[in-house]
Length: 228
Image (cartoon, rainbow, N blue to C red; front, side, top):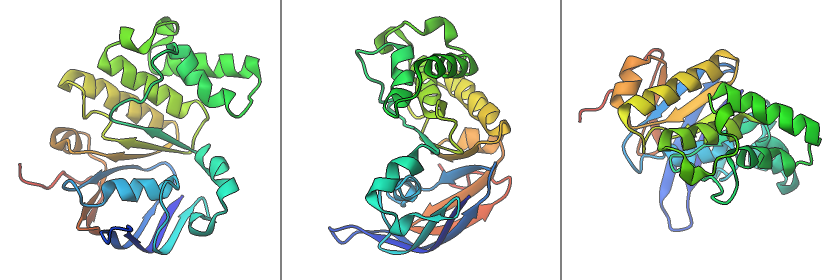
């Protein structure tokens, strides 16, 4: 599903973000990515959806070498990958329904299929009754659920969640985690970058810890592992 071999990433300013990563993540896994700020977590996830390319090494997504992928093929890759951000990134002038539907409209999906799929994913995140609301009429947790629905509307095989609970209160964070668990139970691979010790230590999953651009720990049913 996701495989990195000897991956290095050095930016133009000379900063080395990743320093020889070797990792494999199989279909259907739920993986936390943890580590201090600046450790390389964001670069790690950006390589997966081809926001960045490795300086050296190879990245395979579903047996496709994305390191050498032509630019025109990147949109096809990204249809297999949903991304959820800490800051939601919803379009403020579009309704909940329109924000989710937009991901299908850009690939010219049939109108009937768009409506069916959008309402299905809104039901999955328990927001079917707020389809006509604007983002600023929703709570932070509801906006994040819209973001998850938008990420899932294309039936992606991989869901990347970058600090999805970072801006949410504890109760709302648990609601988001339960939704991510349900998505994972349905067969989607979930990769979640997080600083939440409580979530990682309570909902035990595989933990990949990155420090100074290197994987220092890869542990099944792991814990957060850092002193506060």
